[in-house]
Image (cartoon, rainbow, N blue to C red; front, side, top):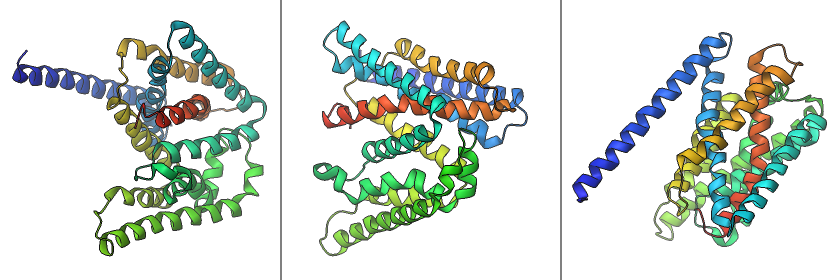
Length: 308
């Protein structure tokens, strides 16, 4: 096949995929808005982002498990422990929601910091300014500077009275996130002006993320960051990795958590009156449960240079 024909072939499939995805997103957001007329507009966008970006970015783990395995037995063993970790986290949310919430914050902060590192600091990832800035920003800025709204959102998931006493600590850590992110920019300017090194535009990203969480409502900032920054970054990095993706195999691992959210929201959770609140609760709980083994898997894959 000539290069010209190959370009046309790739463009055709890219266009078909893009149009199909756009239609699915439109149909989903229209359907959820129609079926749940009292749903906040951005909540509809957030749930759509979770369905089409959040869950798929976790479903890609099956291909990493394939890559790390040497036999079918290895795949089954890794997949078994992966699912055990997911189930354990779901039960933790049900049985000890307070502890599960704090644990969720801890490993999510680590995952965001480790997987979204953008500067060339691979020799000391966990000692870098960027690591600590990214570790602190996603949760501590919302709970530190928008505590009332953040506690209200967290209240949809579990009882939050114990978090109210931690607000001063969250505020201090939120300020630290902004200071560290600002220092990264100052350091970049210093290297540019004094050491005549090339300016790294990505050095602005931690500060921009901080501003995102400072300015916007926590529901908006967390939704934008997780769905449209973190998940998109992961998917793009995955597409640029040597790991091959097969859509037919991806679809079951993508659809299963979505079905679980719907079933749990409709038939298991009777504590919430509004279906909208229950969907939000179970989306976060199941997403966070998948995130536990996902965090460790991405950590080892990045360390082994399997993905960037």
